[in-house]
Image (cartoon, rainbow, N blue to C red):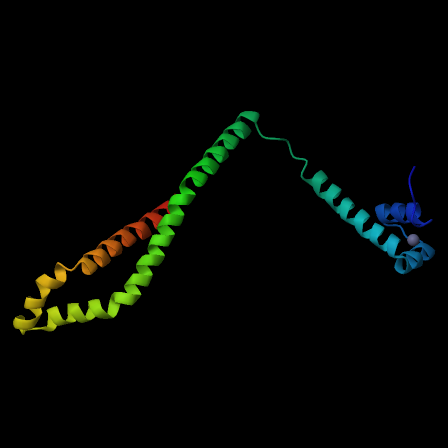
Length: 159
Ligand SMILES: [Zn+2]
């Protein structure tokens, strides 16, 4: 059995559906919270029904639908499989950026000293030691790997 919160509910629902409001019913709706909400719900449902009726175009070929579903499923699986890799790449890029920011002044000073230094005595003497430094090798490797990761990330987005 239907439980009515307000005696006017049926009349309000009918008016909201048809759009024909008597002045009394309109006055009641404006003063009754139950009927105001009912009007909103009925109007929303009517708008949805209208939109569905407008979209009642013939369905495409089932074979095409199935093929699209297969493609979407493959793409979903591919994204799930590669998301971890993409995140590792993002972390690598972030680490490279952090290390690059931390070491940039020292590297620039080293490069500047090497390039500008006609005084080969100090720059060239320091170079083999610097090139053999584990820190420099590590930073260089991470920079190269980070660059590759960045390139790979942009390549993934082109697909
Ligand atoms: Zn009411």
